[in-house]
Length: 483
Image 1: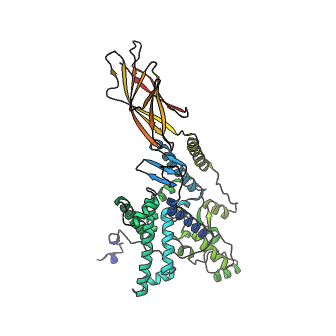
Image 2: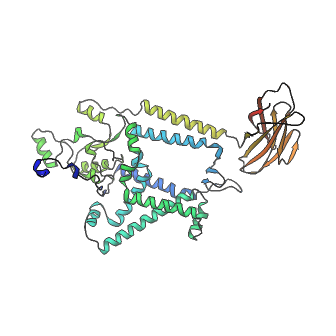
Image 3: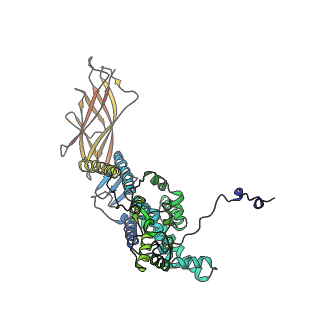
């Protein structure tokens, strides 16, 4: 007896995996499409051309406005120069990025995904290229369903050639942030580029071509963790792209709606045209409610508004709204929008605090710094006359564009003497050292304290570095060890 005869469901015969259907987003025009297009040109313009912007930092310094200089362990951003010792700025930037993302989510859901995410931006660019060569939604669907012809082959070859060119320039632009851009471009054109640059260009070319050209919405739905995190962080007051079912249901054609209203029956504004689904880059039907695939890009709003204007009905049947407002309208209550609430205030406060601290630190940072590392084995040495000697490695940082002379001296312990290996001259009790422009000088230093029966095993050690030309000084405290 078969399963069909017994009426049992053949669960074990169901496939565990089903290929995702190919999505053919339709071209649309409107407010949110214009915003996305403007942001696309702005963000890609910055990414592709920023490495070529010049910034004069003086002689012997790189003149690229934004440069990550691994060779000299520095990061340049216009007038700002970040050293490895200032890694806390990177920490601050990461906190600002996270809090900004949380704030955007609290205000308007996945608005980052819909407008600024690199996957969205480059996929949008690839969609635009695809439409140029293969036409809009219907033409692409008809072409893919039909046989291979010379015209179709030509379209595919041209499209993929442009895709690869865009992907290659994307990878090339990335490596330009790590080397002088005009110089590296010249080496690439002469086939003299270093292997490291070529490897990274190949990696980023491949990932851009595959992710933006083929995987597209699969990245947003399956690969990216942010939709899951965002769903846990959002609340009922966050604005999301919402189908206002209080106004749209029941759905019916324009003719049926006219007859229903004439008969005194309820008729919704939605005519079930499917345009909101046709333009969605992830293939979501927003009318079915919140969906993990919705990236809040607002293109369905533009498509629906276009239809509503054609049939002379109010726009914003789909809009940035909340389910709470839909329920309130159904209950005959006024809408409420709570953009300012506890979590948005908290996120904004953290952003302001961290940003303020970073800005204050940048404005007050010194062009010189001093750090010390004490010898660990042995902690001290007792000399023949009973004096105690501690060995140190002192790092003197000169963030100026010119060479400077520093006088290294010891302020504590009282009566201690200083010996600096490699000092150019002495000035009283201080040792003079020369530090080149934008350089760190590592000094081997010995501090010798006279024998004293009252000396404790640990006492303050204070070193001072003074700019000979300006008198500006910097001190660093450590510990002087004794028996």
